[in-house]
Length: 461
Ligand SMILES: [Zn+2]
Image (tube, rainbow, N blue to C red; front, top):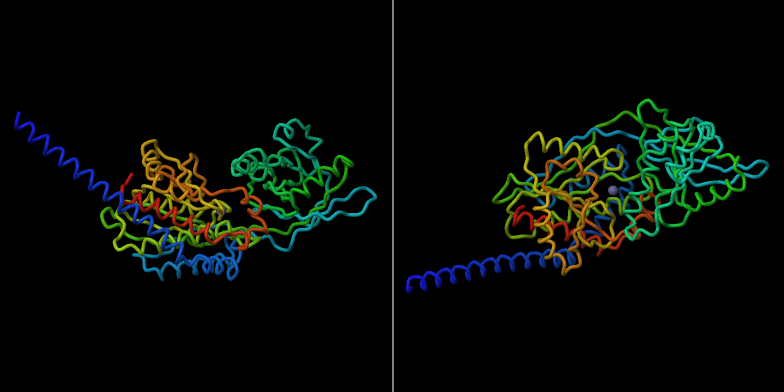
């Protein structure tokens, strides 16, 4: 009996110490997280970095001199922070050029011309002079497929399905409507249309067209495709009601050039205890060729650089290796993301988590995640340490296009989740400029990614 009491006593003391030490490490983590926030909110060079990227370099479409300038600029910033390595990873990328500004008019019989602002969709073919044709409006795929071929042949198909304003998350409304931009030209061409006009993917009511990637399919003729601002789309719709045989004139000079070699930029801090286990934080270098690519994705670039800077402020190295990846060519094929994943597969690297920031520069609220239930549960538990900062929300379905290729290679895919009510007002348009960003919100996003990577590095998955 006395023996038993002794052992119970020993076990109790052991448990007490175990709890105390767990609590101490937990307190350490909390202190490190507070350090990241304090350090970044007082010292982050985010305003200067954003200014360099958006005002000095400007928009950075894949294959442009600006995109190459951004590669060099990023490499220089990373080298100055002295991680264990900084290197370029060659990527083959397609090159598409807009050429001289597009021209578009509505022409009604016997009436004057009404000018329209349009933007060619990324990857579109040119019009070969002025393309003038009647317009048939549709608001759903069902409407298009119900139209007899002779009602479509030789005309523009005008996709006028608006993003659903009742969706509380505008990102969801965007994802629901984006198919008319991505495959609209294919479906219209199948029915003999000569062009596709697409209502811009925004909830804002204005005349700014929003571009974005589109696709063609083998064996189906490639027809020109352009975006119209939402007010222009409403105007065209109204004019078609008044005059169903009005003609739309479109002139576009865009072209696809031979593919070239560009680069991803990668920096690494090698882990102190598990150097062969990787956690990545990243964003994309390229943007569209209008505006300044501020929110999409200069924000992610400066946040990823800041994450590296924050890790370098710690007295000791992280337990696991952290890679900071700047992907080339997210906007037109995500070739940079695919290249990184194929290299990781070839080298049989073990990736615990792939994190991306590509959800705009607005207030971060947490993360979107995909993965098996157990690591997702662990991440959800870690996120409680971000909750007191208002960034602990974990929701399913990540939104990082560059990390998609890591699906079977990484235990979890995480994208920084931000408030998105203003994002689609500016997304892929002339309006995506530095003045729309708030440095504090961008900085907080950098810290959220740093904290998440730090906790995964410390506790593993
Ligand atoms: Zn983006």
